[in-house]
Image (cartoon, rainbow, N blue to C red; front, side, top):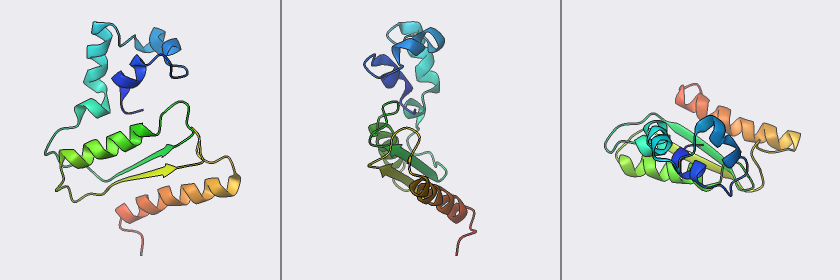
Length: 125
């Protein structure tokens, strides 16, 4: 996930409070400050040119909420509206944490990922 401090603060999210032992509880100042140092969302810099990004999410994901990739996409775009590199997001409205469970739909989803990668490598026609 990309919004570490905010997500880890919410104990209603499955698995979150159980991971406080390993990650630290961001409701405690020392852990909160540490998480803010490496949280991708909190380290986006205004005016910095970021590489092409392909952010994905699933509407039914109980681990990483759909708004995290949406929020990260908006944050990156807002930080540098003149960035020539694409900042793209694809939200699957029927998938969960591990993408599509149907084999053929999974392959279609994977094709989107590879298409973006091949395009960025200038290997797509």
